[in-house]
Length: 156
Image 1 (spheres, rainbow, N blue to C red):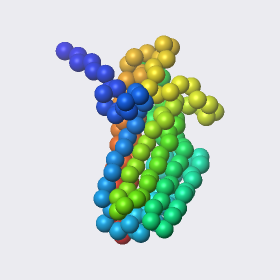
Image 2 (tube, rainbow, N blue to C red):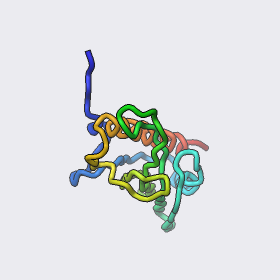
Image 3 (cartoon, one colour):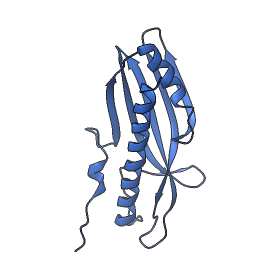
């Protein structure tokens, strides 16, 4: 017996239908969290950052970046898996003793870095199996990045 499920349910969506991961965590030490948030974007093995911006005040901080993750998935139903770059935006905001992270604006890129399609919208030319595998593996990779962020923000 083969069970087929749709992976879209794994990636959270906003009310407008866009994929977005969001979380808010109490910060034990706001100053420490600000320093960790600034240096988090210096780790290219997690996300290949193209741009990083920072807005800082004494009481709060916003760091955001645009980059891509490499996701291993089949591009066609019977092919072997290959590396597919998926662009994303990520932000970390520290305010009122908490940090909030947000990851959104997912886009599938070609080998030259040009946008092929928004991850939320399966193109007709992409087989459902290949698309579901891309969604599942994107979810796994982003979940790994979030888990790493949470550990990183706690470290001394």
